[in-house]
Image (cartoon, rainbow, N blue to C red; front, side, top):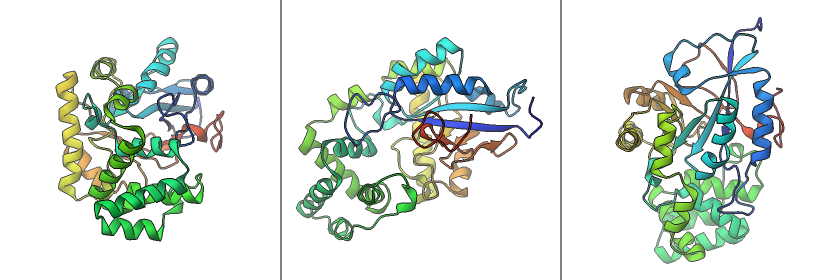
Amino acid sequence: MSAHPAEILAVTYHYLTGSVFPGPGVHPFRPERFRVQVEALSRTCRFLSLGDLEAGTLPDLGEASRYAVLTFDDGLAEQAEAAVPVLEAMGIPGAFFPCTSTLGTGRLLHVHRIHALQSAMPDSELLLLFLDLAVRLGFEESVEMISQGEGEGALYPYDSPGTRVLKSLFNYRLPPGEREALSEAAFAEIYGPEAPWAKRLYMSPETVRKLSEAGFLGTHTHAHRPLGQLDGKSIRREIAESLDILEQTTGRRPVSVSYPYGNRLAVSEEVFQAAAECGLVCGFTTERATSPAGKNRLNLGRFDAEDLPPGKRPIVAL
C-alpha cells in the first residue's frame, strides 16, 4: 500500500466512437484505446463507484496506489454501447452523467449541434454562416460579437485559434437565447430536422434506467448550461429539474453531478452551494487534478481521457 495520502484520480470520457457525426468536429477516444487505458488503470488503482463516493467513507485502498473513477458525460448512446460491456467484463463501476433535456425529446444539446456543424465545414465557414444567420434573425449583439471574433483561448489550450474563438463565443459569450437559436437554425440548414439525429446520439430512457439500477447514474444538469454564469435560482432550477426527470424516469434520485464544462467559468462556490441545497453530495469539475480522499466531494477534479496514456497528450503517469 502507498505511504502517500490517498488520492482520487477521476477520468472523463465523451465520444468513444464518434459514429453519429464523424468528422473534424468530433474527437472520439475509440473503444480500443478505452480498453487499454482501463486495463492500465486497473493495475495500480482501486476503482470507486458513485455509491462509494456518496457514502463518504471510502473502501480500503488495499495494495492499490490510488483510487480511480471513470466518468462519462452528456448521455451519449455510444458510451453505453462501447464502454459498459468492457466495464461489466472487468467488474469495474462507471459513472454516467446525462443531460435530461435530451431524454426522449428529440432535441440536441447546443454543444452537440456545434460539434456536428464543425464536422460539416471549417470553423471559418461556420462563423460566416453564424454571422449571416445572426443578421437575418436580427441578433444585433451576436452580430457584433461574432464580427469581433474574440475568444478565451485559455479555456481551450489544445484547439486551433479559430476553434477557440468559435467555442468561446458559442459556449460562453453570446446571449444564451441567441446562441441557442443560432445553433438550431444552422443545424437545420445543414442537417435538416434534428430529431432523427438526437435519437441516434443519446441514450434512451431504457438505457438510463439500466444505468440507474446498476448504481452508475448521476446528472449532467438539464440543458448543459455553464452554471457559473447563472444566478443562484437558475443554477438550482437546472439541477433540480434534471433530478426530477431522472427520478421520474428511473424511480431513483441521483445525488451526484458532473458540472457542464466544469471550468473556472462554469463552477464556483455558489454552484457548489446550490448543488448541496439540491441534495447532491458528489460533484465533478474539469480541473485537471487528482483530489485528496478527504476533499469536499462536491468539488472533485478530473482529467480528460487524452491526458492519460494512451491519450494524445499524457500528463499523468499510470
